[in-house]
Image (cartoon, rainbow, N blue to C red; front, side, top):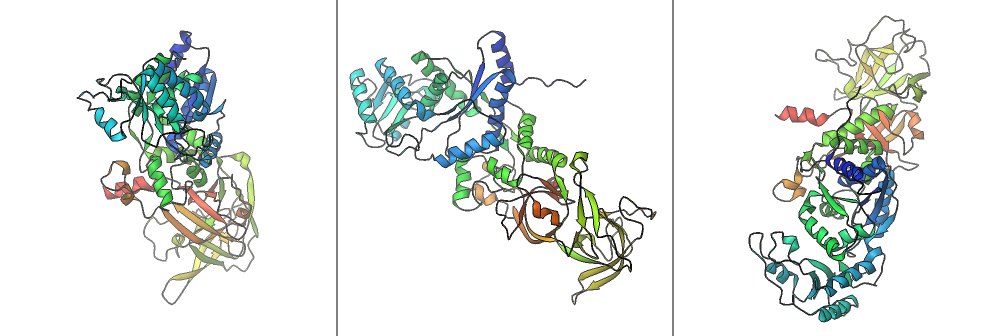
Length: 554
């Protein structure tokens, strides 16, 4: 009997809440800011928020935290929705913080009326100076004791667009000596004359995250508002606003964010890579974005499995990217269709007097008997990998040589008879005989070759372009390194092979299908494919090649 997986701390909290009858149903939300594309770190949050309500009954909202009009775009909204759906989740309500701008304004007015908020004419630099230091209390703003009537009038004029950007803010009146810096009269609203992607030019003031977040949760009756650990010191402010307004008591909980080795998760830095054309857009297959992983050939199942594997923690740590790579290899091994593609061709000529068969049958996926098999054309002239032939091989060499017979996948055993070289001494053609009676599936030759090679028929092969992707950074934690993180970019993160040769069945390749190019790795069709050019991206090698390299250097 398999051991049941223990509950994570959030599941324990929810089960206790349900046991005590605190909630009739669990309601969570995924609240991205639409200022960039989602990355693998967001996938963890998506899987957690949607997974909890799937497990315990309830629903999850998709809420866009669109309170900063300068950085937000509809393009990002649409990409986020596509990514969540692709991962396999559906939200109950599609909502926007901007849906609540009128309500949030009313909340702010209520706090002003209660003497708990005031308009401050101080500059942002002056406000920062007033806050003091963690070991030193702050100082009151000279505008802190304005009357309720004056604050109401100024705040309305701020809303009406009468003041310049940065000239005034609305601050909560809490405690300038609080040991928690976030409680020292935080800014609730700032003036920003900017066009909003949904509300247009209606608003000249926009709420700060700390004011919009908890109140939006409350309006939606979110029961468990899950954030990352950097929001722990924000929680008292989250609770303070809700308590002072007397609204639905949503609760905030914090978990460790996903930090992945050889990767950066900062949207600002990812945007720099895009804008400086270091990568080919947000969906470059080297990017940790969900769209980049999708283009590279990752499956939603593999990403979900990765998120469940790493679990939920209360302490930040660096997750090895090898775990993500393990999850994609494990899934692709089960579902990928096997194909033969020669990257660096060397010609093989069959010289038997009798003609070989012209069609051989090969299984599509030995891990999945239901996948069936396919027919591949065979001929007297073939390509194998150049690295699969050696004239004077070392011991334990299991590929083709003058003294070593090999089997061609799904076809015959062949033996080298003659090596044709060019003027430089480089082999350009290997003349071979196939062993009669050695056809796969009907072999009665009695020979047991040590190696099996993939191949393609020269006459029938189709040209393809291959893009071999590797890790974008060559250091484990680029964000923590000294200097500019871009100096740690792996210059060999993309290798293009324009002259590969593939079996003809790949003319019917589909974007949604995943392939294992036998002995080479897992691949998928790229969006750059056209009628005149077929492009495949390598999703992953067949095994962890980095572990081997690290071992070599140690």
